[in-house]
Picture 1 (tube, rainbow, N blue to C red):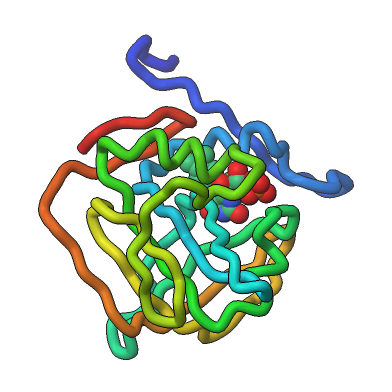
Picture 2 (picture 1 turned 180 degrees about the horizontal axis):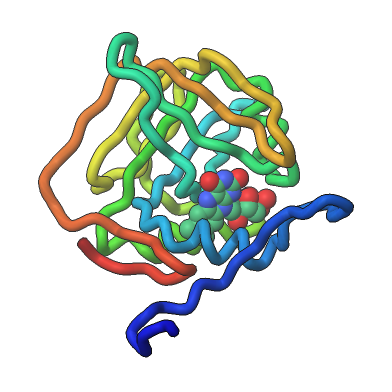
Length: 174
Ligand SMILES: Cc1cc2nc3c(=O)[nH]c(=O)nc-3n(C[C@H](O)[C@H](O)[C@H](O)COP(=O)(O)O)c2cc1C
């Protein structure tokens, strides 16, 4: 018999004959992994700044210094990132939630009226972020409905402060 304190798990499993794992359960399980929030930026073929909110950012290697993030094949910035030589990563601070929302939803020029720092390769970086990574694109891996963008970090900086944290579709401060 289970004790009343035993938590109930919601499960998904791909069984023989199923085409896929239950996407809703999969997304909710992934949502339990708390992450920071980044805005990842580059320049498109016309030299215009593009950027997207991403929480898939992570470290890969210390020697050499490598990072990765994954970009949806459906993203409006997909064409720009598919030819980019460099990208910038700005790790958002706790008071930059509005920027996270802006770079995930706004359909026009996301940089209009926004001050930026110009980084290596001409990529824009978000001022007052907690950390910046300026990266040279090393590899793009085609996986499922995303591209994994591996970058070599050419320059980085950071400051002390509270981070913007994301878990189960909600923002927190830490
Ligand atoms: C917190 C958060 C994290 C996200 N992380 C990613 C990500 O890692 N990769 C990605 O391709 N899209 C991610 N998105 C979605 C994009 O920010 C954006 O909403 C999506 O690309 C559709 O908009 P667009 O095509 O106009 O850029 C995230 C959105 C939010 C709110």
